[in-house]
Length: 163
Image 1 (cartoon, rainbow, N blue to C red):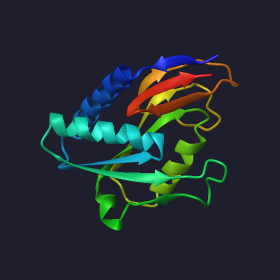
Image 2: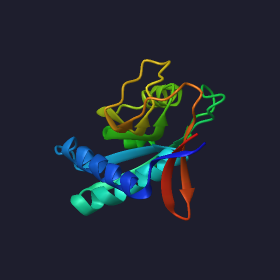
Image 3: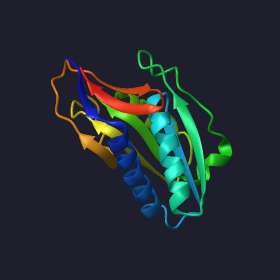
Image 4: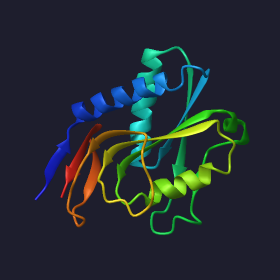
């Protein structure tokens, strides 16, 4: 049985809220750096970047982190450069399940000298095995541990499904 948790319009509304929260939390910096965890976190980050650019006249850089969720320790890749490390960072992912992906991504980002790192997730499932707390979340979803939540991209419309 599949249940739609968020439709495309709800996801856009959450991304708009994220954009305003990022703007509010970066009022004292000239350049905003958003990092999306590939693949679906990066899709959310692209939407947020576009909405920030509609709100404020600041430079917004979008980067990505790619991580193998089965072997996260040695598989992290990114398009970050050494010049990016002077920025405040906003790390975006789609669904926070155990916190493992976010924990390894944060560990990777600690090798840079960012001013600060804030985390944003579209859906927080409340099944954390790692000590991760997100700064901004779209929705909290209490589910059974065996349930799966996926962000689907169907014809450029995103939706979150519980199954």
